[in-house]
Length: 148
Picture (cartoon, rainbow, N blue to C red):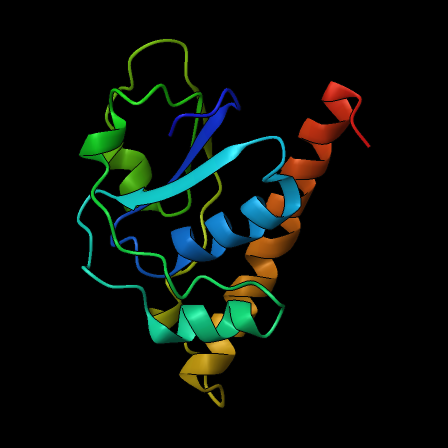
């Protein structure tokens, strides 16, 4: 966390699925402009293997990510906090300074399996919902800066 780039923290309760998928997607889309992290209010302690597999399918490697608690980020100069689940949005603490906050909620993939769908299918579906939101955020940020 030592660059001069604005810092974006993506929060979810367990920091095992949605926040890591969003982190990987945003880092690929705008890692040259933003420093991107993810954390949880009650971290699961691991990144779900299906989250790793779902992103690997679209060319993003999050296999080295770890599940982290949000506390170390409270005084880390975070500029933007994005919550991706309702509980994290409700439990999100106040970050010091002027912090932009956004909430874009997505279903928890292991709990979102629909009839006829495998758990991996649910991860792919949620990934495909997260991807355009975070790619659009990156594109809008890039456009606002006038960067190609």
